[in-house]
Image 1: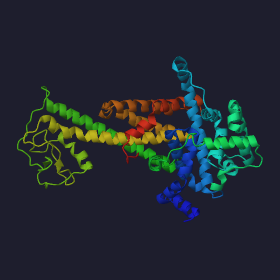
Image 2: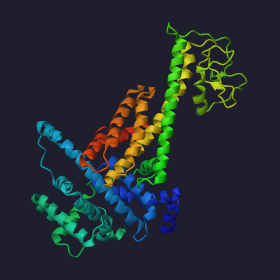
Image 3: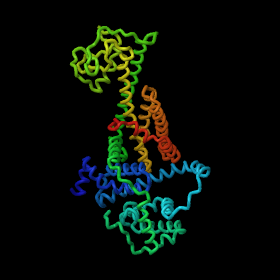
Image 4: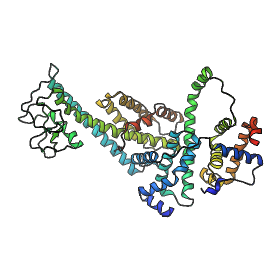
Length: 180
Length: 300
């Protein structure tokens, strides 16, 4: 069955068709959500919201882009908005946690490149991190990233370049190691 | 999203950038490496969410009418439940009299279902089973003594649709407390049903609110919806449904956030919204609501 037929059936309330759409796309959406938040519960929240929104808005899908592209556009918005909300919440809790750390946490050992890269990635703004994750880890093209994020393909490249520059700065002490 | 796109090699990358890209790609094996997708769990949540809220798109007038009617129905069920509960309690206390314990006044032993010990009403066939609805209906009759019957007995209404089996422990002379049990079972079931439906509504409302917040818009009908659910929450707080400490705490937290949503002014106020978000998150409301709603139960 073609994607168009599947969409048509789903639009008419066919739950089997909705499930087929879900099965075809959920893995990639979940991977992206998980990569961005690193938490199973949040990733599930994001995926749930993505598909609920998508099924609710399927009537508005005009088929100009592939369904996966359209779904990813919803997913990236859901994830970025969700992360913003989580960040606001964590910011409020931060002062207390920081005080605890000062009082009790021992000095961490010198991190290796792997840990440093994780920290560096986490420090990137979500909009930049999203491009790095999508492009370098999940293999999306700049064209796909551009459509999903609602930016031009060139802007996606520029964001990736800027993100890498920031990573390079963070990883400067390990330059010899990663430059080989 | 084709697989050949997994190897990006834009010509405009510098060698340093390319190396960094490779490093990040390799690091992808460690960075928030996703587990297998919990497909069924997420699908169940999607179905539940859509079943309750009808999706997170702005409510159409038709949908608004639906939840509004649902809220009215729920309030009616609650009011009925509370009335039944109060009548049953009054009857029970009248039966108990000044000494506290009721007196067993049963006249003749009632035939019982051999296996279950369930008491059979006259004319009932052994093996006849009552549905949950029957039992809900059956639990109230103790408040009305049928002619010729001793007050306090569980008597089926004469109507054919009335339950014919009432569960009780075996034995010709029942302890008074046992006889009183069905009297409180109906309101309890009714409260449970009403609680579950109300919690389903509340979860749908909060999910809808959260989705709207994430999308940086707000359904103008949310205040009215919250007011209806708040009314039901307060009714439940005044009912035996809140005797369970966990349920009471959940209802109290829910009452707080619903009151915040009701009081929320129509215009966007980041401070108000932050406070509502904080209440929902700090009190873990959505997970607790989901945990309190049995699978398959949705809002009205």
